[in-house]
Image (cartoon, rainbow, N blue to C red; front, side, top):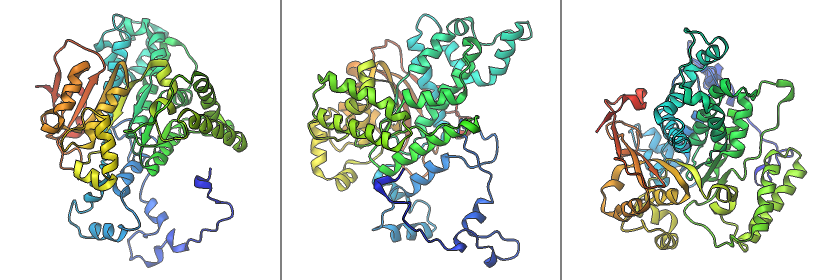
Length: 486
């Protein structure tokens, strides 16, 4: 589809041959420096299911890393950026990231956060039917046990007795139903690492449960259902939104086995949305008829393949949003994702890595007018706050009853004076379930922050906070069993 009505059919793009291959100029033994010469040095895959490297390859995660590096480059600062890169001084280019607070989350951490999100969600939903430990085994080790469980279901011998507990097997259909019904949002989606990570974990768990539910759905079916029903994201940067969509599309394509009947890619315009997560619009939430029509059109648009039909649905949806917002069609969670709030009054999981921008940098970038609006909107907007503080409050407000916020942020909010109001807000009606102190690890190479993973539930839970510390600086062993309790 053309972006911004760009006429790609009638536009000639002239590229010199040497851009693709420039081997003639290389010395003996060297590879060329054209695009195809560079590509020839690597193996490629479109899988990014887990943090472990099963093959030496480049995958869609590269898109996220490129986004982090080049997000802040604009025509007016491109020469300055190149100068910073050529200086050879590590970190010179990081100031461009600081303007936007963009830091790419390593895959190991995304993997851990997504797994913990699912464990907490399922443990809450199946309270009394299966223990947290039994659910954790399904989520964390289910894939490695998959073939064993298949053999156990067929043979049922002592050699192949099930490793998954009786509670998991007896409630397999319920677990599968809950995984299909989960609603997940990343309010600062960036290049889409967390939606892709959540999809991978959900699909992996449903594949294991398929042994006991006897469903015939394929991995592709699970993925497409997950993208359509479970995943939502927002980002203020339009380029990030397009990269996030691309990663979801690539993840779908790789598991489409029926080559003769490949389905067209779904339309993700109302799933991954460009907008400001921290502001909303005045709306009349009692326009039930308009919301009902809006929510009936979204699935039709998602699956539409005919360009004329698709544009017709889009025009109707945008018109309904315009009516609900009285002409102010700025992004608002309760409008664009209204089906989630009508069904669950919020998301089961709010996950992500919000931007780290100080109050001074924020004012320089967005101006004082927006800062005044945020100061009047958020209880936590006190003093010289960092923008991630507001995202924590926003994320908690977006969580459904018993839903969880799972964020990786600087640990300053736990002690800084500017976050006293945020801490009071959290203690007023939420419960801190887990803190993972990542300060000994070099998580973000170009960011001078000491990160912590926070898991906070929208409920009052009378249990002590689980504080976990990494045993060493090796991020490759990033899993729950590797941590020590503080």
